[in-house]
Length: 168
Image (cartoon, rainbow, N blue to C red; front, side):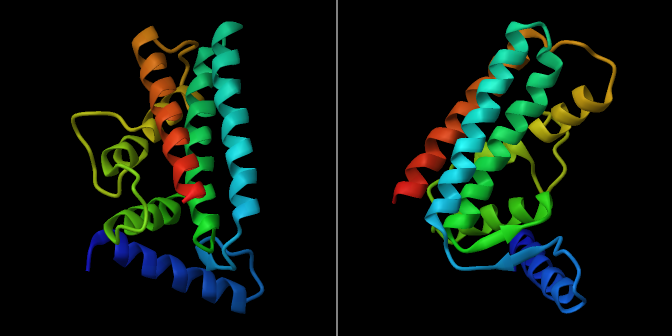
């Protein structure tokens, strides 16, 4: 069983246990597939993407890193909603999307997913999760231009591919 499938199984069990204990689920919950909810996540992704662009325009590009990350994350939540899942945990969301890719249920490029975050440690490059954390919790006040452009383009690609997946 792949690491993503192992994590997915753990996430489903975690949420099931939490629901039985009347707790807010922090894993993955199986729900009815909901295209309308997926479209709402797309709207939020577009909103966050615009926010990332606007932050840069007003001199707050450090916040662009978070806005772009959450634009991409909302896309993943849109895909989850389309396939009948609600997620209360980022790692669970990543595991679900990776599993859907492995099962060829979605055509999202695995390399793009890995650029957002990976279940495996990446030494040679930073994921958008790591960049977001560095700029959200660190002291830097702006992204360098190349990093900004890379995150913007990645966010746009993820959004575009997600829209195609939702429409399939």
